Image (tube, rainbow, N blue to C red; front, top):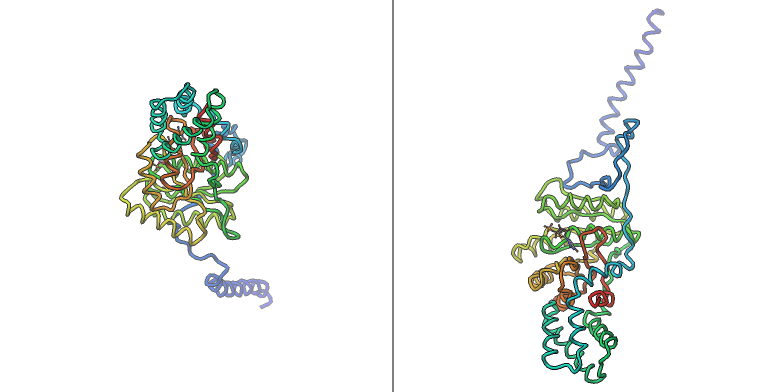
Length: 384
Ligand SMILES: Nc1nc2c(ncn2[C@@H]2O[C@H](COP(=O)(O)OP(=O)(O)OP(=O)(O)O)[C@@H](O)[C@H]2O)c(=O)[nH]1
């Protein structure tokens, strides 16, 4: 017996420990310590990819270095003064308008034909009949009363009247601040396909990052397969994560909801949600955008609904604007591709059409070619 005792004691200890473990583990599994069984979520948060412009990593010394390539984030250009910086683009796009107006107004003794020519120039630049008529009336009155003739005075007069037409007092603030403590501002970006929505969301993320905000992107354009990749690349360049669906054609409202939820959980300042741009019938559009808005507002208030319009599409763009204005509760307009058109007058027309101010303008395909809109700077741009 004394020979067996040294073996028996450890054996007993092992048996007792085994019994205790058998009793405790199942209980713990039923309790709170262990995570619940997780079903795969419909969306995933994609951390920023290494920036495309990151330098090629040097040959790594260790396996760890190879697994973690250096990420070089881009530093977006400051937003202050962007429109002034991009003024040459406007001057190029608007010069026929500005130059032609000035040329006619500088003539001695303006005739009826001259006034007709002015009106036609405004109409060709998509200003719209109503606003064009108002501008002509205002200019006629001033020419009659003030007898303006010297070129500098003519330019000043035209500048003042154009600024009045564009609306210097409209509130063009981009509402990106959450309305309740702990909730992000939520910006929903809508519009017809190809107008530049995804690009605008990417550029806007850079604007916000440049201004010191933290951002999450929601890729709710689940219709175009490449849109989420495109958005994720934009975000990656400035260290902004993208919430996206795991499969094409997923419910855009679910993605929008998850993005806002994620933004709230992460305590970010702003969530930007990109949407699909197909213009089906009005009822379908209304259903889809309505559902997206409804599910978002379960998590946080929508602080801005931006309608992206392509400035080169003229009257067609206005027609689209009308439909989206009716169904999406648009609070601001982004006018893209102003660099590619001489029809800067669309700024005036679209504001009149929707009763909503232009808040941002796209002036090129470059990452920082999006500028906050300002009436005076815009007019200076088109007058050259
Ligand atoms: N010149 C110029 N091109 C622009 C501007 N904004 C966007 N684009 C270009 O317009 C094209 C379409 O842009 P996207 O952002 O893919 O358009 P989208 O509205 O998201 O399109 P869908 O996803 O199909 O709905 C791209 O080639 C952009 O580079 C701009 O301000 N100026």
